Image: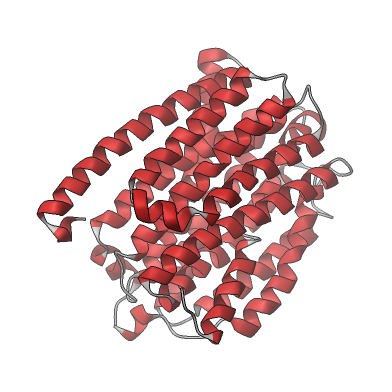
Amino acid sequence: MELDKSKRRLMWTILVIALVQMPMLALMPAINLIQTVAFPERSLAEVQTAVSMTNLFAPITAIIAATFINRGKLTKKTAIIIGLCLLTLTGAASTVLNTAFWHLIFLSIMLGASVGFFLTNAFGVMFDNFDDAAREVVSGYQTSAINLGGILFSLAGGALATIYWYGGYLVLLTGLPVAILAAVVIPKYKSPALRSGRGAFKSITALDPGVFYYAGAASLFMTMYGVCGGNISTHLSELGNSATAGVATAIQMGGGVVAGIFFGRISARLKDMIMALACLAISVGFVIIALFPTTLIMIYVGVFISGMSLSMMLPRSVFRVSTLVDETTSATAAVIASSISPGLGMFLSPIIFTNLTVALGGESTVFRFFFVAGVALVFGAVLTVVTIRRQKRALRSPDAA
């Protein structure tokens, strides 16, 4: 992949922004601590849902930002800087707002607003400034950077949570230097949708149906993937503290880094079948976690394998969406593919799986991991069948792919 100097600088800036694109991972190691120490009167599902409200508000904010961008009131560069500044403010606010349950909800809303502004538009900048071949490679690197940032956030958040339950929020202060870098490097340009005379809602009607297929697959996948982050600290409560859970989450992200490095080559060879492989990885990982609940090393193996799945599913869905849009629809598509679909999936994860498995098998996290492993396997089989059918249709009509 040959890039000129300005494009290479932009690529590295996008990768640096990617390091802070999973801020919730700084909080996940403290879930059990928040539930048992900070707010013992609240159930695990309530705490998980409060924390995951970030994933509900991020898409809402992303839609608002996209609307302003498409109307020429905001540029993607400005939106990214606003989001990164909000990330920093969330970390600062946690030092004061940490004594009531509504504080936890408020911090999640602030974090959601932050992510909604900068995450989708970082993808949008990539959509607008790189061609298809470069996107496939950069999207893999970007996912590796996201996971590498997740490792750092998990380790730092887990360690700080042993001192303060809200310690993970302090890691978000790293958003400030990233905002400064974005302000210097990212080009400032008006929305192509604005130049073409299209608004945000017209862009939605103009989207290829495939955008919604890949976004839907990513959303369903994230409901399963989110089970690990939301339950690993509780699963490990007898084996260690929040720092131990932080290591587990970091190892999960490590799996994502490894898979992301090789994503470009694997994706080019397997194409959409890599999404079914992602479901197999999450299923195998969760089975190992459930089979060895008292063996730390095997739990780490399980979270590593399940972590690889993220760098198979999300970059493939985002890359395929990027090939189905043009400049006039890229902002809207970026919101759907990188914010609405994964955010909705992560938000619904505890609501669906924690409550469902509690009803079916009690509070056991072992049962929860087994159950979701089975769901992932079924979903992977469905994706396999659909992918084969789509490939056959594409052979008959290239435009149907």
